[in-house]
Image (tube, rainbow, N blue to C red):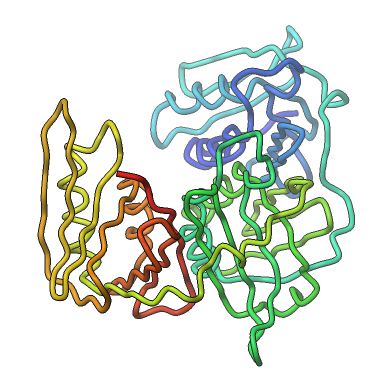
Amino acid sequence: MKFTIERSILLKTLSHVQSIVEKRNTIPVLSNVKIEALPDGISFKATDMDTESTEIVDAKIQEQGATTAPAHMLYDIVRKLSDGSEVELTFPDDKGQLTISSGKSKFSLSCIGVEDFPVISGDALPINFSMSVAELKGVIDRTKFAVSTEETRYYLNGVYMHAKTTGAASVLRVVATDGHRLACVETPLPQGAESLNGVIIPRKTIAEIRKLLDDTSAETVAISMSDNKVRFTLDNITLTSKLIDGTYPDYERVIPTDNDKSLEMSVKDLAVAVDRVSVVAERTRAIKMITGTNHVIITTSSPELGSAQEEMEAVYNGEALEIGYNFRYLLDILAEIVGDTVKISFADASSPSVIHDTSDSSAVFVLMPMRV
C-alpha cells in the first residue's frame, strides 16, 4: 500500500474516525484505524465493537493494500505536520511498519494485520429514510442534553425515536429523559419511516453523528435501521451503530396535561436572571421561582456563600406559587427555546412543570421540581 494525500484531508478524516476509538482497550486492534487503499479512494475505518465509522477520501494511489495503525498516535502525528503539506503513507516499509512521510518528517508505526480487525456493518437494514442536515441537527440538539448518563438505567442512555400519528398528522418523535427532565420533539414523518416502531440510539452515536453534521457540506442524511442497528450516511462517511436493547419507558405518562397555572416571560431575561443567581447556587444547584401577577422572582441562598435575588416582568395566571429547580437543568432547556417567549405551566410546587416555546409547538420539555 502506498498513497499520497493532502494533510488537511487526512487530518479531517482521522479526526472523525479516531473519536470512535476508546482511549483504553483490552483488545489491541480496537485501538487502531484500518487504512485500505482501494481503486476508488482510501478507506479509513474505526470501531469500538458497538459503533463503526467509515470514510472514503481521494488520494494519489501508487499501490493498493491495507493495514491497521494506532488511531490516536496517527492523528497526533498528522495534526503536528505543516499546514498545506502532502503526506505519503507506505506499508509495509523495510521493517514491516507503516511509514508516514511529509517534507523532512518521517515516522514509522507498528501495525496489526487487517485480518484481526472486526466489522459490525453489513446487515440488512429494512427501514430507510432521509432527513435534511438542519432537521436532524434540530431534533438532536433539542433532546441530547436530557439523555441519562446513569448506567444502571441503560435504556435511558440514548435518544428514543419512533413514528407517531397524532390526529391526521404523522410525525417522527424524538425523546430523551434522565428522570429529572424530559425533552420531546416532533418533525414531519419522513417517507420510509412509517414502520419505525421505536429504537433507542446510544448517547455516543448521537454525539458522533452530531459532530459529523457540523463538518459536512451535505444537505441530507440517509438513515437506515433494523431492530438492532442504525446507519447514517452523508457524503463519503458512513456511521453504523448497534441500538440499545431495551424497552423505553412510557414517557407520555410523565408529560402533564392538566397543569392549570401558566407563567409567560422573555426567555432571554429568564436565562440571564437564572445565570446570575446561579453564582451563589453553584454548590446546591437549587434556585427558587416565586410567581406574582406581573412579575417573577428568582432567588437562592446558601449558608456558606450568601443569597441572590432577581426580579423580572412576567404574565402569570393563578395563585402565588413557590417552586424550586435545578438551575442547570432549567438553563439547558431554555437554551433550546428558539422563540422570544417561554411558557411554564404548573400544577403545584411538587409536580412536574411543562415548558413550551410559545413560537414552536413541535417541542415540549418537562422539568421535575426540587425541594428548596
